[in-house]
Length: 147
Image (cartoon, rainbow, N blue to C red; front, side):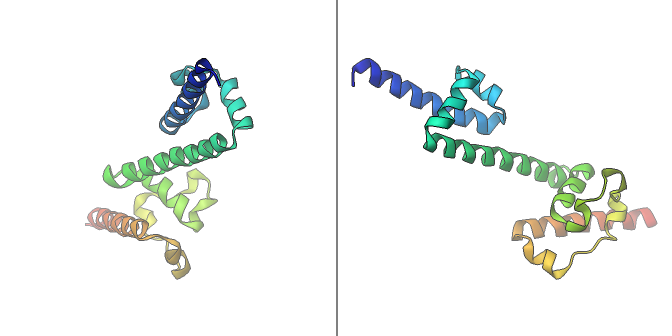
């Protein structure tokens, strides 16, 4: 291997790593390719010929999805955003999943929904704590509205 070939290989690996980093942050192939300075066709070629890169890309997709979940959770809980709370609840509570958005309950009506013990068993501790806090906040809102 010549020095030039080694340099090109090193640069390619660096660009692959940058691409994965940018994708995990931005969530689109177009943006990651532009920020990395490669054409999107180059990305697709890397996925076809480099199974390790392809697996790393799949991990980056999951990282981006986790970022979305984290942001939904932050807005729903930390910012007390009722729409995000309903979105979070819909993603976690089976009885809300298939309802059209127009028929989802308001936060005041949300307390009418119940979880079965099987539903609760599926929740991790953090989600369970979040749900309890949210329900307490909704309950306070309902109590204040009734007074």
